[in-house]
Image (cartoon, rainbow, N blue to C red):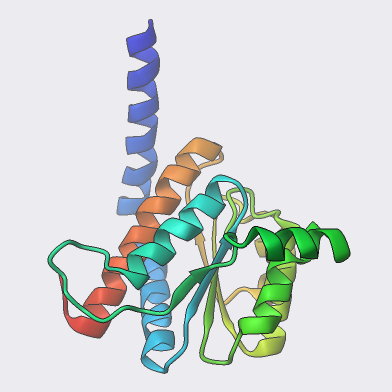
Length: 200
């Protein structure tokens, strides 16, 4: 019985990723996001990444791939990327003084420049702090990419004016969305290395 539970999880993960692989429009969207982030870096901008919970972990992971390198053996210069989830002093001060909804907006106001790009990761698409972060990005002239689930949530449905590119994983199951998000995040890193350094 336990084996069947394990196998079922694996098969559902494969099924979700197969849907992504078979969706030409979604693949085009992922390529567009890779090119947008690469252009930001080419122009001297940086990538700011944010999310909550497991998505905060993904934000740190993707930032590390860009600052260090994505693939072993691919020697290239460090790329400016930062997770907005990692400084507990900033997060708790902002949460205390302005509310948790402002934790990403405040940092984007501090660090965001017109050639930058923000990648917001939210499985539900309903994260208010990412929505407000995207509002601040608009004011700062920063481009935005939303990485979310099948519906896009409230941000995509009600505030699509804040989103330059929306990558929607074709699933409503949180675990499957999260698994696909880190895969897509790593693909974006690979696309950036290809665009900027012609590294496979």
